[in-house]
Length: 326
Image 1: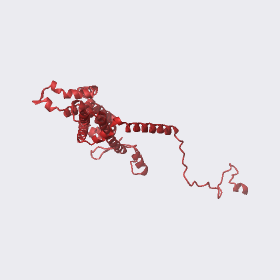
Image 2: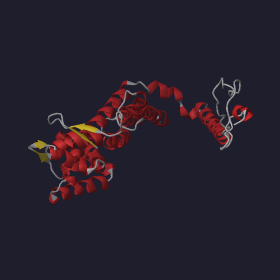
Image 3: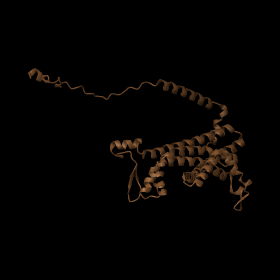
Image 4: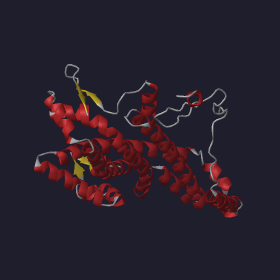
């Protein structure tokens, strides 16, 4: 092999190979390359149109003398209105809690191997989801027509407007919540229950310790939506004088005939309640989702070494510290 061939890195029997010489290093990239996003002209035009239309609507309502905004602001914090607001909140929370408890039992009945219990549960859901909520409110309020006395007590005394509304809203909502809870339960593979039983748990223990904790994140989002709907559904008890927000507003404008300004008061308070409930639902969903494998926080923790090394769900069955992996 001659010296020129050795200098060029060429082998006598093979092809030539490039040999980097001093000073041939590629230039160093001082700043990261940033891709430029194309302008979204459609979004810009749509946003401008929406802003203009909103501004025109707000301006037309703000300057409309028929709106009587002064009357609206005068009654926003009126004690009568605030009392009705408190009844609305109380009615929504109590009805939702009662409906969840009842719905859990109905969902278990539907999933039961007992065909009679399953049929009763399905019939319950069919009836209370099928009858309009307003009709149920009226039926419970007029229960005295069928049963003048209950346990020796006058029915009209026992069931007031608030009580009739609470019963009707709870039972009607439980029909929907039963299906939501049942959907959360069946979203967990049946094999997990079998695995829990094989580790020494009873089926009830497997339901409480394995199935329900995993089904919560499936149940939470629709439950939040149902609660928001319940806040608005409480207005239905106004037809029986349930002392809720709408009932109090109707009593006021029945005296001063300021119908539209008082209805705006109710609209503002309902929007405030729904907004607060929506914010709470958002943080509650994020709290449950962040604890699940595959969520953004879980992936971030896994990338930094602070999270789980895998996306498998480890269930501690409380039976001697035994672990079961999905």
